[in-house]
Length: 199
Length: 177
Image (cartoon, rainbow over all chains, first blue to last red; front, side, top):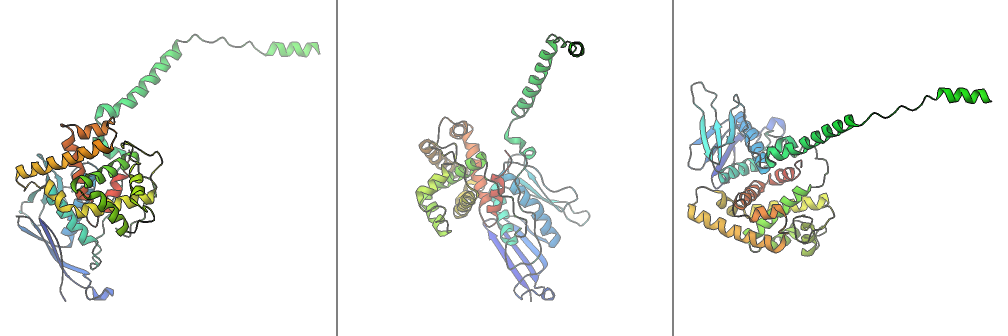
């Protein structure tokens, strides 16, 4: 029995089609085998794909949104991946969908913040839908490390503390080198001998 | 994602508390009844033990060091999580407004009017409740830097809304400082 799940936002509609995986003991209303999906982004061609395309879409869009939330705008999706997303020059986001068929140029879509937020919400609804058992889990969002948050402080401010520290250390080393050498304490051997002689 | 190992319990950093409270303030700027909605949502979501009344809820928000009357005690993890869940629910409720502010499909004149109204309400709330000597507050009120910073807050709220928004926002507020 064919099953369909729809997730809709103002500018985005994601429709999954599939079958229940009865051999895995799933219920008749649980979509366990994905036969295909369609993604309609406002005013653009409806996209069709298979499970690997949906996984590729989730693998780049969700981490991109996670980084965006921390103010980090960086591209996701390597050249050999089916989907890539990157910040666009004049604001907004560029979603690039690469076909697995030879001689088919990639499809590039420009999304504004609202359209990207709609897409993220649709993907969230889909991956957290209890009626699906597709094993489309992606990594849980994690806090970003300091090295990933360079944008928060300008280079001058970031370099200021280590440079001041290194300068202070160098100054201390120079001042120490300028100090006159302290006289060596007198040898303790003689008094010991003298003390031994008086006994 | 539900099967992911639980994150280590860690209180929010000072910066995390500042951002969380500023986004809650944005919700109040977007919705004149935002303060009431926060209290109502807190009760609806079963946080009456953590925030028995509006004063207790307000006290937790005063852990934000940018506030005029700030509290020095740390914000416990359970209460921070509850505030993040309340913000997630508020952002979901306000999502159509957030979306319309961020959309480039809106006519520019209408969009600019909406932003101007939001920024004036936010500035009013900041002047009323925040310490104006703080650099972060001054930057938000600055006519040059303020618009970009308030847009960042609205963008964060939009990506914090919806079913996966809580985890994303929680992770973002726990970024290294």
